[in-house]
Structures are given as C-alpha cells and as structure tokens.
Amino acid sequence: MNSRNDGPKGQGIQSIIITNAPDLNETNFACWTSEKDNTATELKFKYNSDLQNLEISTTEGTPI
Image (cartoon, rainbow, N blue to C red; front, side, top):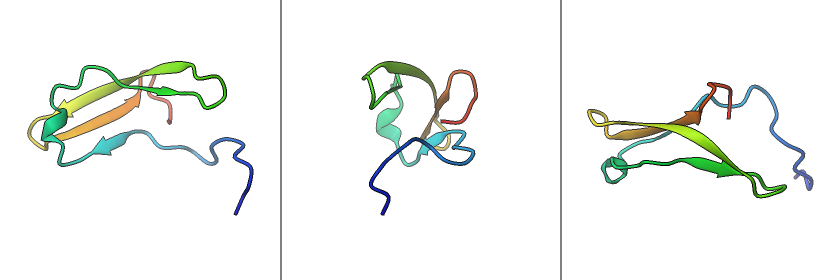
C-alpha cells in the first residue's frame, strides 16, 4: 500500500452519480473540501426525476 497520498492520478472522473436517490430530489447545494486547508469548492448538481438519480460535477466541467 502507498503510505502517502500525493493527489489524484490519471484523468479523474467527470461526475459522481448517486442512483436510487428519490430522497435527494430537493438537493440545493454540493461542494467538496480540501484535505490540505479545508477550503470549500462549490460543485454543480442535477437531479433527474425520471431516473431518480443525482449527478454531481465541477462547475467548469473539468474532472473531479
């Protein structure tokens, strides 16, 4: 195991999709916080009522 986490590797991921999430239909805020300095970065979120899922991505479309 790698004992040191020195950041993400590769291309990253475009979005996180939480499925089977009808209880998240009223989501109105998403963010992530830095492990280094606890700064918060706002994320984009979109609930799909047909599929009952919540998609979370960066506001500028770059990988997470």
